[in-house]
Image 1 (cartoon, rainbow, N blue to C red):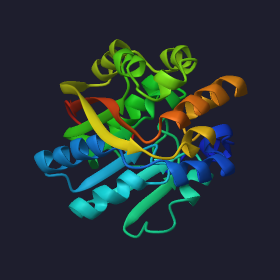
Image 2: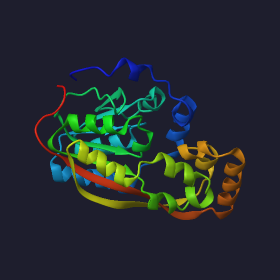
Image 3: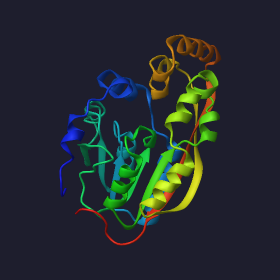
Image 4: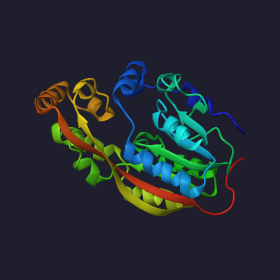
Length: 259
């Protein structure tokens, strides 16, 4: 690593869904997004990646799966010490660091594949983060961003169907796809593909929703949460699907930014 993450990043205090209590709920109830993982692994194969970085790795569940499937050297950064604290078990072979996307503690042009899963709506500064991700990618390296579009947010079977109060909050905090496209272009990242991935599953337990394992559930009232949980519990078990909008881009040009 050529430089340390900034002091500001290390002073960050997280709260709500990613503080100590929230990290425990997340670790208990959130699982792999299989469709996203398959997309990441496909890019690892196609780009012959040796080095992989997950931005906003949380408890590193996806990063561990990438490491196990590919044997790549895997780095993960997250600003929450509580989330990283949940990575200790089973994190052998992973290089984990407390840092923000806006100040990545990695040298320039070193990483073959950078990816993030449901992270861009949490970024403090979208353009600075994309500049940093472009900086650490080697020329020709791949950036994969798994996020949500307006269409996938509105069509969420569980969160939007049972907790419709989450929809305006999500539309407000998720960057529009056009905004993400602009950020890619501005920072020398050429979009080569965009598609929706799916992860079908059967929900048998309402606790992830009652305990607010999804950050958007922290944005609605206790009454709205209780109504949605009661409706959902009556419908269990429930076959459903989780979707993500995936953008794949390649870094253009020569080395950029600080070393």
